[in-house]
Length: 94
Image 1 (cartoon, helix red, strand yellow):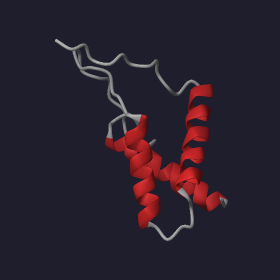
Image 2: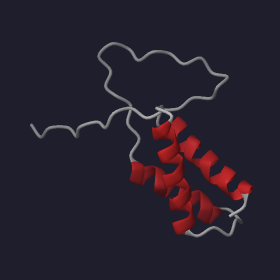
Image 3: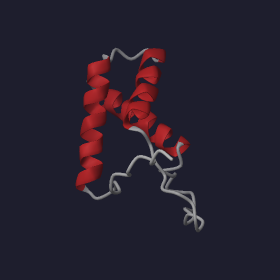
Image 4: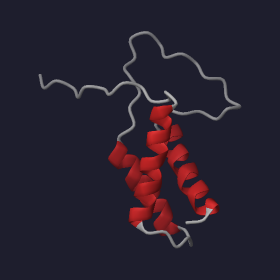
């Protein structure tokens, strides 16, 4: 993979995270959650599927495995710098 390939994959993942409301452009003001709102959650599998779809639509020669490996490295980095919150428990069946 080239640096440009990795940059594309990470950029698409950030696009996904922004669409879920868990990331924001640095130029945007980030507002605190309103009282009573739940945690913001981005599913790992959903983000992977989003990025793999972007890879498929692009002219980049990246395999699904390479895409997943980049995302795993990115998530490990985000965890290491403290950018990820604690895991959220699934909703209880009522």
